[in-house]
Image 1 (cartoon, helix red, strand yellow):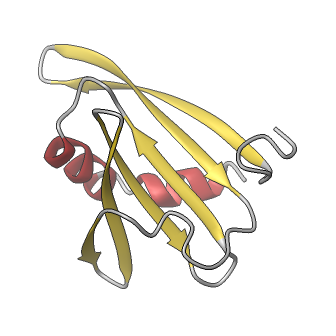
Image 2 (cartoon, helix red, strand yellow):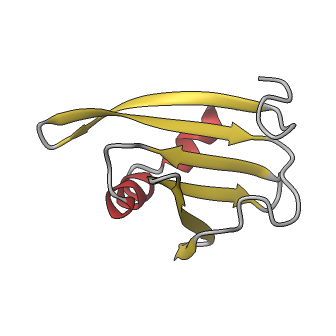
Length: 103
């Protein structure tokens, strides 16, 4: 999506996730050329050498990460997961690395 989100080139990815007996959709958005304090709101969580942020996006939890080297942002959201479940899923399945493979 050239200039697709807030004037940033973006890619939309969707994953089908099994959570117990339930299947739900996880949406990921990859944004190019983020600068300054974009996506800097939310509660910060240090995970290894990465700082992930947990947000409330209009009642839906979202987890974000900005790669400080290439200024690419990653946003993960699912309307059927809690913020804790979403953060745990992003970290335990290494979704950031998976999203980086799709760039």
